[in-house]
Length: 120
Image (cartoon, rainbow, N blue to C red; front, side, top):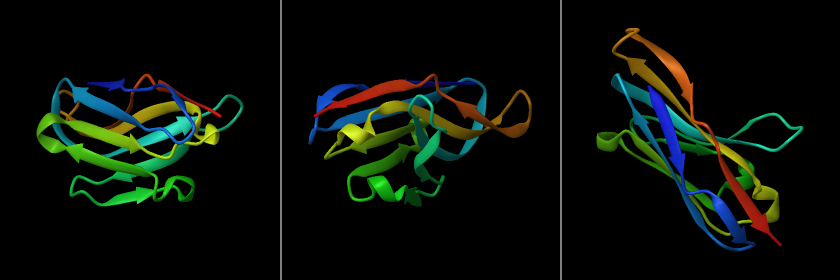
């Protein structure tokens, strides 16, 4: 099982980006999917999370600016980042809880991370 992220980059304050994360491999089903972010020296923090049914939760710092969504048919989760601020600068990681056909069990998986940099 592999999570492949895309969509990071450099953007000015107030700008927007859209991150995508596609899961591939020996997948039977995917439970929750989400996005975390991390800056050097800090712990990785939850940004947004979405259940298989579409219920979403957000960190207080991004509520009203970021939107998480998913396409279950494509095993893909998205994060729309609007009204970006310099403090949103971080490496963003995709996370998913996946039932692997090979191991026949749910397990957490992480993407490799994508850099988001917001200039002031």
